[in-house]
Amino acid sequence: MNWTHASAFAAIFTTAIAGHAWAAGGPHAHDHGHAMSDHAALPFGEPGDPKKPARPISVVMTDGDGKMAFIPASIELRQGEQIKFLLRNNGASDHELVLGTLATNLEHAKEMADSPDMKHEEPNTKRLEPKKTGEILWRFTKAGEFDFSCLIPGHREAGMTGKIIVKPLSAAK
Image 1 (tube, rainbow, N blue to C red):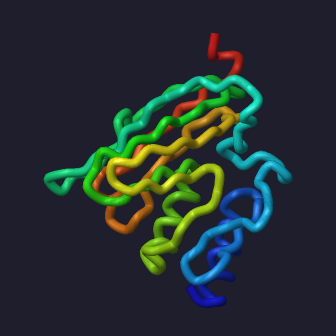
Image 2 (image 1 turned 180 degrees about the vertical axis):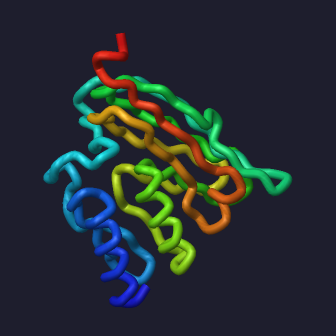
């Protein structure tokens, strides 16, 4: 990724996620260079606090016969809930899970198409090799519908996307 692409990427995400700047950190890296917890919550929440309880949710990444998927592909939560996503890649190729809004994930997918070897270092993202496991700890501070996708080129298009529905506190009872 050259400086022009990095600048365009930063500008897109600054606008797309309400002023929270993202910066590309090298030819194949995507690293903030700062802790996300130092800033206001993103539209889809904030990194979780490992000292607080979290509800575990298992998400399996699969591929085969030209189809790719997350199981489950739809998750319902309550606003304010902290989730520990327990990820397992049962597929034959690398996969990742990127939490975001649909708009930010679609924009990021375009950038990934230009830099398919981009590595992520954000707390809302985890990339796994085949047969590996990992975790994302995330607190959903806002109600709404959010996206999770594998943004490795071609994977989202092959079906590797899902939806997170966060119910407002008043409706969660």
